[in-house]
Image (cartoon, rainbow, N blue to C red; front, side, top):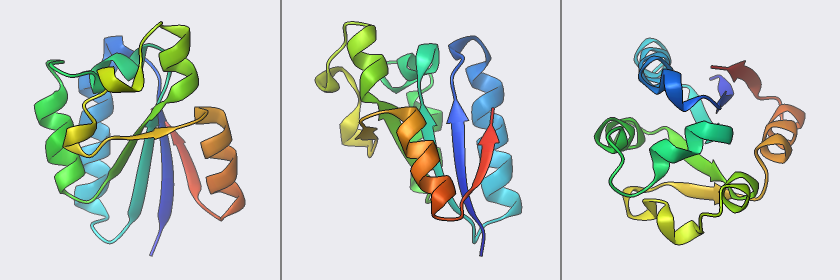
Length: 111
């Protein structure tokens, strides 16, 4: 089984990012996939965002999705702005999460 840590950081290409995550999960259904969104991409994880239905579908397929707390703080948003009811987690720092996962043997994929 493969372990993959994915970073998405550009809201302007969110449709493509979500498509690629879905493609990865569909082609490797047994893979353990974790995604962390930072920079402008974290906006997709906010309550009411247009991408939340697709994100919820991806979460329901078994992909773990997290928002970067540092990015939220930088954007003057709180954890309460994130649609955590859909299963989205919060990590302290996207860069830290990526480094930790790579140290655990995860493959890194930047989208």
